[in-house]
Amino acid sequence: MTFEHSVKVAFLDVGQGDSIVVTVPNTGEAVIIDCPEADTVIEYLRNERIHSIRALIITHLHLDHFKDAVGFLENCSSQLNIKCEHLIFNWPSNLQKLAPDADGHSEIYRNPKRRNQARLTAYQELVAWTKRNTRSCFPLLRPNNGYRLRIKGTIKDAIRILQPSHGCMGSLMQSGLNNTSAVLRIEGPGSSALLTADIEPDGWNQLRSSHSDLQSDVLKFPHHGAWKNADPADILTAVDPSIVIISVGTDGIQYSHPNVHVFAAIRNRSNTRLLCTQATSRCVDNPDSHASQIDAILQAHSRGSGHIRTHRGCPCAGTIVIELGDQVTVLQPDISVHRNQIILRFLTSHRCRI
Image (cartoon, rainbow, N blue to C red; front, side, top):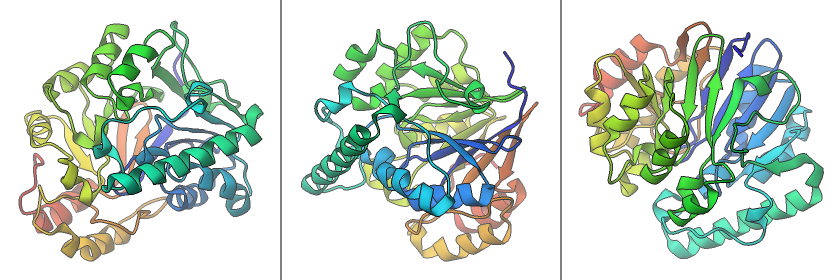
């Protein structure tokens, strides 16, 4: 079934993390995918004049994806006068105990003790909220035969959960929490986006074995561009996107995000445009020294919802807004402004194909 409405997908600039807002402008509906920073999500929804928040989806329980989920759930009613109708994540299994986390490189806090305490606190808040609002929550796992969201409204028909399924969750968990990430496909009338959260090669191999056709116009590259122990050309060839998004923070460089071989593989594709939410030292020395100037340029040329971003790090493309219509369109940033006034002017060692 082809979705009849154009869909907007906003990759919010939240620094080192993921936060995506899917909206259907014709119906005023939204679904949020991950929320490490509630204020940024609320500001975007306010500017988009959304009147129905159908769900908040948490792809997996790493801080840089769910740290402020409860803050959003508790504050959207007072700040937007809208209630988030559903919380969707791997539940109830994840309520029994905190899932093992072997790869701290994907977290917000570098200090292990601080990271573990922050994650435990955020998790406890999530468990408490879920117990108070049981009827609003349901699990993210899809049946083996495919899955549409069990939510109200029109937007549910634009979103498909491809992974994880009941059948593969156990094996994916053994290879690390990132590989249990929800993989979603967003579909407009004639274009689509594949959102891969933090899956790593094991999760990708499972996805490939379950879905023969993953071609999408937009690819949100997995795990902030950290594709280890595998060839990134494999995922790029299978998806064959015209646009690749990397959601990364300026401080992501301390985790080797994004990896240089990911940049190289994308650059080798002549018809693929790369957009990163923030700049790292892979593209310019001391990117923070350029943050205020780039921020001003993006603000001056913003469209629609305006230039919405975190207060940490140096933006590159900033918040990226894509329209999935009969064709895919980048609404923000403007391609000429981004190339000429930001990349070529400030990012002297950029990895983009210009």
